[in-house]
Image 1 (cartoon, helix red, strand yellow):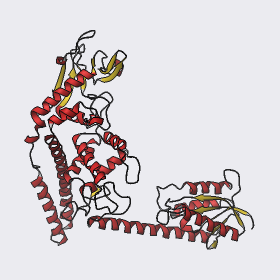
Image 2 (image 1 turned 90 degrees about the vertical axis):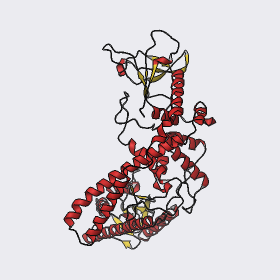
Image 3 (image 1 turned 135 degrees about the vertical axis):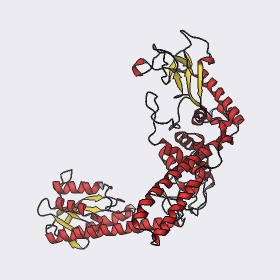
Image 4 (image 1 turned 45 degrees about the vertical axis):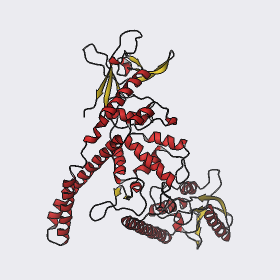
Amino acid sequence: MTNVPVVSYARISADIRRDEHGVQDQHRLNRETAERHGWAVVHEYTDNDKSAAKADVVRDDFEAMLRALRAGELPDGTAVQGVVIVAEDRLARRPGDYERFVEAITYQDGRVFADARGTKDLYSEDTESMGLFGAVISKMEVRKMQRRMRRSHRTRAEQGLPVGGTRPFGWKPDRLTLDPEEARLVRQAVLDLIAGRSLHSITNQWRREGAKTSLGNEWTTPSLKLNVQNPRICGWREINGELVRDPAGNPVVGQWEPIVTPEQWMAVKNIFDARRGHYIHRDGRIGHILTPDFREPNYLLTGFLRCGRAKPDGSLCNTSLRVTHSKDCVQHIYICPGKTVGGCGGLGRRGDMVDLFISEAVLAKLEQVQLAASAAPAEWPGQAEYEGAKTRLEELRVQWTAGNITNELFFSTAPDLEKRIARLRTEAQGFTAATQRRQARSDTDITGIRRRWYLPEEEDGLPLTIKRSYIREALLAVIIYPSGKGRRKFNPDLLEPIWREG
């Protein structure tokens, strides 16, 4: 057969080589093989750095090649009568993919196929069976490599050793020594999150300051969230969402320098854990609990203000106020939305004056009580119960390993103890988060807060999310009562702050 139009397929995966030069070498070998048999390569398909062993990886050129083989031609109408590759394990490592390839190439009679070893008759049942057997063996080898890699990761984690891959932000290339500037950014971000600042606000600041990820990319809110949630920043290690622990149940401490304390990291983790499943409805109703701001808000008291206008039945409207603007008013205005969206539409108040009065009230509250930080218990009350449960579980394991208790007793008792330990551990993390938050409040200079409260953020002013966190610590809501018809002088007596107890 001469001048048979065939296509070339090349794949360079991450475990072999990444560069395009390797792909070009494969295509060169494919062309030489085609010329040796008198075939002409009419198209080259390439899936660079795409694994053929993973089910969730889509190889676009592989799929395009199957479509061309089934149709017998390329999209431009050029005939296709065969395929040439370097090796079958570069074509498919999953039996299902190999079967799809054989079905596509044998959809019409007379097709040709070759690799570096020579031609193969895919119409022969023996050849197809050998190809499938090779794909199965290849898949088994991939699974062995994956298991060895997982065991290696687990062993290194249990020894507190750093792993390879991308340099973690905050550390130098040795992955052990802190990068002073990057570590400072991460440390401040953690402290800001504990104080109530939003991820969106911190991300914007980092982008303004020109900070880049360890790969040189712009920071985004998701990438920053991954960074501050990584237990590596406090010296711990996580695998598949679980902390790596020693036989006693304590987190393994890595050999790298930590950026923050474990208590600070747990406080941040608790913040994000508390947000799961919690939300605020569009009409202002609280789905579960009122959580910190997810994004940088535009106005200081959005979500705190409630309409105090009386309904015909004597009850309060109590709708969450929204922000609007008027042509004859420079400042924003808080208004009750119209009846079509659940409000009464009968109340509005000048926003700058409301913001000023509530700010002063909250600052006075901070100065007066310091958010009761000094009255908080120094130690978690459940520590003794937690340690006792861990001790009992370990004793149970020792007795079971020694054969002193039956399997039935061990497996009926251990799960309950494990659940109890997990519950207590969660409570401990919540207590730690609350303690860190109170500590951040008690260590704060209220005079400094007052000074920074009214400054623009670019002049060392407090970010809006941190101001809102102080308000949230002090207030549940603010009810605004109507002032009557027409324009009236601002009357702070018509604002009723609903303070948190304690």
